[in-house]
Image 1 (cartoon, rainbow, N blue to C red):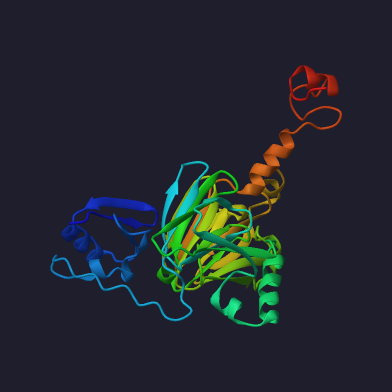
Image 2 (image 1 turned 180 degrees about the vertical axis):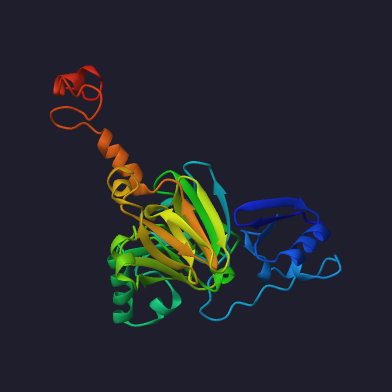
Length: 336
């Protein structure tokens, strides 16, 4: 029998035997659950195994049949801790779509094809204008004009393809059907997905949120019923917000949220806090119900620290700055 883990607002409970888990869920169903064999944490309300009564295990419901236009079902494994990559296993005829330039390696039976847009069924089945529109959406979000589709064209078994994260952080696997078929994420966080997932635009409706929300007016919208891989900088934190519950976050630390979470911006505090607090002028205010994913190291923060520490003409910011360029040479910041 499986052992279960439950999560309530970031607090983990477990391991629990099945009967214990059913009892805990009956007392508080507003959380997430996980056991060995599940791809990810899922809302308790959508877990048929824990919906049984009387402490007796229930028979899991069969997986829903794929409808035409649905996403491919793919297997995967994530390797590493700081610089991660995900290895996807494709059955014959199955495909995965990824950002251009994210490929790490592939087996010879995996065919690589570069296409306009996001590779979703509705995008590829339409005409030239539909494909052009899909590609144009990606340009607006700051992504490449193209995506790459990887298909197992062999007929003798599974084939593997791997995608690497662009900078230190965590790869998050998410099944969109567990989150009402839609996730809103920052515009550079998408890494790869099962073919059939649609990558669209999400516009901030409130002007203050659009101007000062950290990711600007436009974010990415991932829709469908398949598996997606989202990359976050540093360590990932997941929170399930209860109805009306609010969480104030640095605007750059918001990675993704479900469609029912309300996203606003609020002033960080008084004038002194704005000028000297080092946290910027605004914070993101997330209001439940819904699920949010936060990152500990936004890429913009890491890039800013790297730029600040880089050699500057006339002296570095720290070591050797009094002596100018000579101090930089003597301190090892720069060679001849």
